Length: 245
Ligand SMILES: *[C@@H]1O[C@H](CO)[C@@H](O)[C@H](O)[C@H]1NC(C)=O
Ligand SMILES: *[C@@H]1O[C@H](CO)[C@@H](O)[C@H](O)[C@H]1NC(C)=O
Image (cartoon, rainbow, N blue to C red):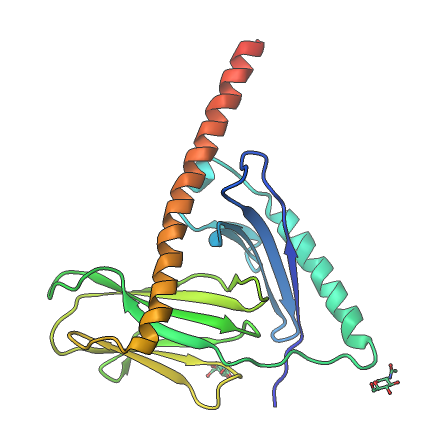
């Protein structure tokens, strides 16, 4: 029986440039498994950047974003150290109970209508993840895929669970069968979700897919809007700088 102690700190830091419609905030957690942790900044629930705890550097989700804004990774590392300290204190408390494993929900869908022979992207959306320890594997026709995929960080949800999106670039044809396999301590056996051409999506999954797809669309719009706000803010401050001189 494996148990993990996780400490999640959700800190809301409303940015100056952002008023009512958009939020960006930083979040970090630290857990006894590994031990491991994560420090990331979100914009409307989508990852803006995370701090790579090994290389102690900032990893921007959209390449080129660092031209418009910056973040000192030391700030993230300090917060992680605080979370680590707090977790140590809490684990020494009598009657401290370890985190309970929750079964995650998995769904697979495609980013755009399938045209055979034209590149497409499969998304494996995993929600309700807790603790944030998970293995996700892409399988094509029974063989584990080793290249051509990427994934987000564990993104915090309001109920303190996490979600993670996994992307696989592929070229659809009539025969290939793709599987997203998720291993998590909340599951007795790995959950598998299959995608192949021309198989109608079961109705129970359609709802999940709609939620994930909506999140993605809102996220992309959010990031674009965020970048525009940042650029606008910079132009304004540059203009102010000029008028003060
Ligand atoms: C631990 O919990 C039990 C049951 O709730 C309680 O009786 C006991 O006093 C607690 N011990 C400590 C050290 O708090
Ligand atoms: C993930 O895979 C590794 C290596 O096979 C295994 O040791 C670990 O227990 C797996 N984690 C989960 C959450 O199943």
